Image (cartoon, rainbow, N blue to C red; front, top):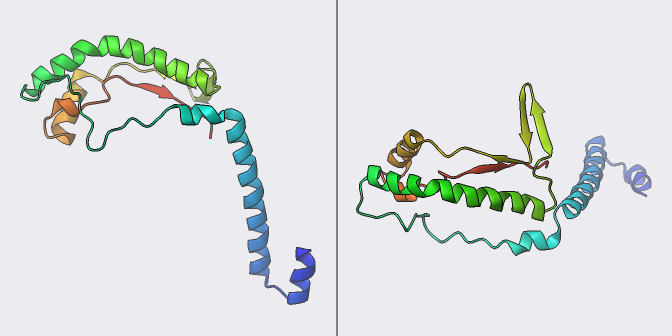
Length: 154
């Protein structure tokens, strides 16, 4: 139908190209939405509520009036136990949304990324630098000492 309309109305080549590109976009968008629906079950997305509070995130258990070194000591004292629990949570999260945490997701040169990768704790030196440079010396604002990586194909 579009070809008939284009010839009757003498549509410019640029307009024909636009319509062609738009058709391809709509088709690809439909394919992507179908893949998203297949990979991520609907209830998995809505089940995890956003718990981020308004304002900056703060580690409430770290004393406000402590020095940066004292705050880091508290954080790093709790970090190993938190990491253990976080690693379990991340692995379960990947499984919950239908991913195999151990599947290889990406290979480049001699590096391989899995869907889920345990990552070591942020170093104390880097944590201190970040607190000083990004949080005006407030170690209570450090929320990424315990970390992990979940890689998905998009």
